[in-house]
Length: 403
Image 1 (cartoon, rainbow, N blue to C red):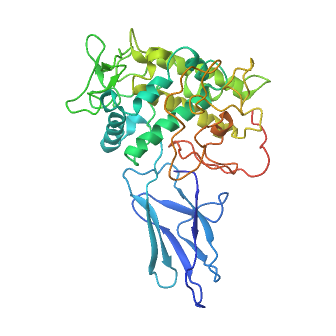
Image 2: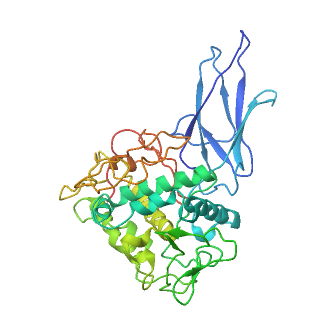
Image 3: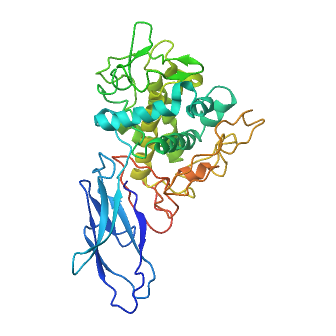
């Protein structure tokens, strides 16, 4: 992805030999670039001298912004002896980012669908916990109608995505760009089309054909707009990114997007559609694509305003009424496994899923750990990026607020 990852290389058993100068260069069809520090400009190739005492030499690798992978292992790097060109090490990689669902390749689409279907396993799989997390009552108050709405859903998406990647490491959550027409999303080959009674129909053999939630086969979703037309009444991306409280807290102003565009995107569907109502919404896989776009908008707003630092009061403002789960230091339910008033009575699913390439955020994430998701300020990244939101390093103290 766009977040630089540190790599360490060292000379082994040099036995007094002159240490080689190495050349690190991209391999595969999807380019990478290399940095000597995360705040530097990436180059390809990069030449470095290995220390002769066997101590590790560090460098960083990252993708070329807006050139993500299309296939597993279509990227990576090779380390060569600079003078002879003899390869010393090769690493395969994939520059995996969250993409617009409408622009996915057939392979990307089907990998995502297959992983979702496997996670659901006709109602017997791990997905049951994700459905049971997003319900009405006290669980809803953990996730909605206060300042923790965005961080909570970022953790929720991350947990689901990591479970999908345990099934297929090439999968990243796609987002439904609900302010634009998505004719490739609303098809029987992808997210389904409703029949006369609002139940989705899919192509034969589709991974979601056997989708079961609450013991019920199928998904209810009635289109409130033509499949090849953008839904109306949703705040534009430009207007959403411009949200800020005049003369006050920027995050508090931006958080009003929970109503519009977020809420409006949910209610563009008709009747008994699962996705229209909080207690039922997570029964529809489209829910996660909708929220992926909500999270993308927050990520883009953070980047535009340089608001990733939990110490900056413009980046997050706690609950005005002190509601638990909506303050920076709060550990979020259900991952903290705390039950009993004021928390919900149950805590499905255990801790947040671990990732093989980052220790963050741990299995009991705090609200504050969701802000610097790329590790711009020195923390470990959470392991996801969006195709249109770059990594931009800024060192030192909290940057000036941009109004």
